[in-house]
Image 1: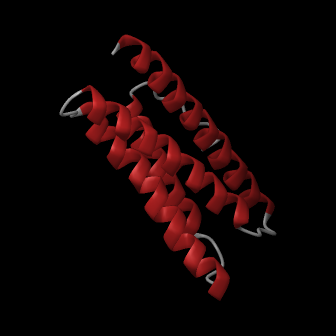
Image 2: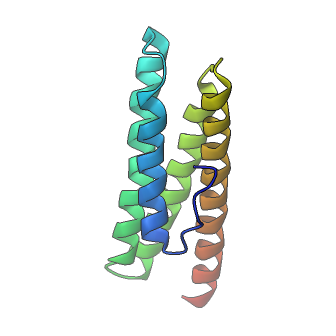
Image 3: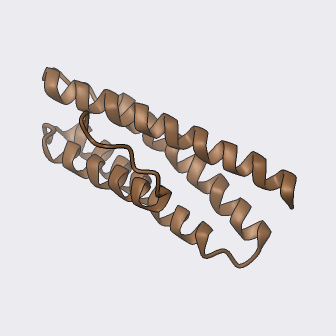
Length: 121
C-alpha cells in the first residue's frame, strides 16, 4: 500500500481501500478477539465503498447527502476497528497505519463533498 499511486476516481479508491483492508486482515492472528474485529472492519470498509457507489446513483439530493454521511460514518467506524488491533509485526503495523491514514483522508474527502454539496442544494 505504501507505493500505490494515488487514485483520483473515488469509487475506485474506496474499492481499493476495502480490498486492502481484506489483504491486511488475512495476515492477522486469528485470536478470539481479533476474529470479531476482523468481521467488523471488513464490513465497515466494504460499506464505505458500497455507499459511495450508491451516492453516485442517487435518487435525489437528500439521498446523495445521506449516502455521503453514511460513507463518513462507516469510514470513522473502520478507523476505530483498525485502531483496536494489537499488532507486534512491524510490517503489519505499518500496513495498519497506512490504512488508518487512507481512511482519514477518505473521511475528510466525504466531509468536504458533503459540506460543498449542502451549500449547492
